[in-house]
Image 1 (cartoon, rainbow, N blue to C red):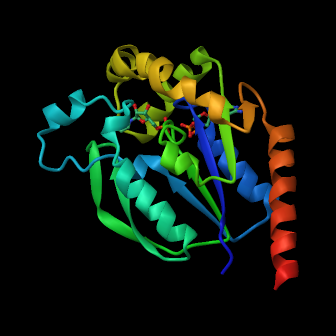
Image 2: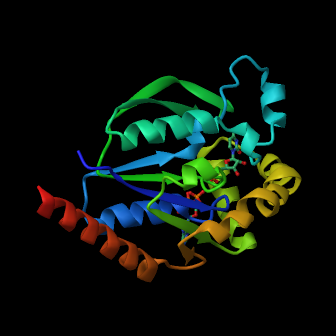
Length: 211
Ligand SMILES: Nc1ncnc2c1ncn2[C@@H]1O[C@H](COP(=O)(O)OP(=O)(O)O)[C@@H](O)[C@H]1O
Ligand SMILES: Nc1ccn([C@@H]2O[C@H](COP(=O)(O)O)[C@@H](O)[C@H]2O)c(=O)n1
């Protein structure tokens, strides 16, 4: 197998990373895309009490097992399969299940801090930063966290002000400078997605010609 094409997608919480990635996959019409969410690589905290877990700063790079993510991406790029951890937001720790994931010709890694680690960044063929206005991100996050991540209104507000917002300025936003493409996503993102899909199709066509 040729080396897979690696895309890294970073951007603030609820900027629309997953939405943009799903849009790329759907519009490219490719089955051969693997989507890895950096959130699955949050540290295992099963040894901690719930009270301790809630206090953790999840927007700091140390909250993630970046070593494991890097190793897994290297393995996938070498055509190997991995045992990927999965994450349980409601319990603030890794879930018990691991997922056996096989390499694919296109691999996408998405996460707020996906462009932080230089070693991982250097493996990428294309680096994308999704950007949305802070107020819009906060509203999207509030709705999402209450509906899908089992959070209360008060906890989302408290976490946003104490860690999410300051860490965004300290660690997330500065990685925008590493991006090849910045996608504004306050409203739509269709033109940017079309461009990226065009690049992916070219890559897949070249790959098919070689075989
Ligand atoms: N362009 C958009 N317009 C309206 N809602 C959006 C848009 N992009 C994302 N959203 C919504 O915002 C929320 C967070 O988006 P998501 O893609 O999960 O963000 P991220 O992966 O960056 O955390 C989701 O409910 C999603 O449907
Ligand atoms: N136990 C956890 C783990 C992470 N978070 C938050 O998730 C955000 C990253 O995910 P996005 O889909 O929003 O990119 C990050 O900002 C963490 O604060 C959490 O709340 N609880």
